Image 1 (tube, rainbow, N blue to C red):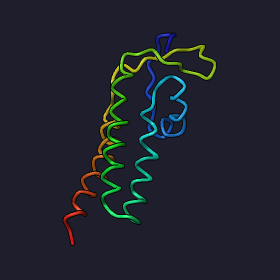
Image 2 (image 1 turned 180 degrees about the vertical axis):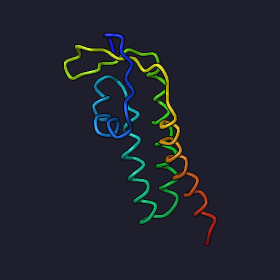
Image 3 (image 1 turned 30 degrees about the vertical axis):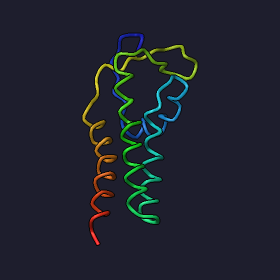
Image 4 (image 1 turned 120 degrees about the vertical axis):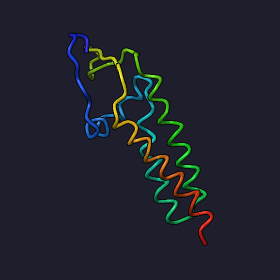
Length: 112
């Protein structure tokens, strides 16, 4: 933040407010609904859809690396600013869920 404090955004908060990142050009949160859609469509339509959704979610999620070091709005009024200085382990778990959807869908293609 602009006042020099260090703040860590917890995963649940990121999930709740991440959609608003689009206003600052941050689209990574939108990998979540694609992942959820991919899980559902894999169940109903088969693994091909899940593979595509998982790969799409991975690609969108990787856009998180673009925001590291960039100044972003920290509130709705764009009064305070924040900078992402590093990515913590939760990010890799989050990305792992997209990779798991992709891997599981690929495996389902080869299991009779």
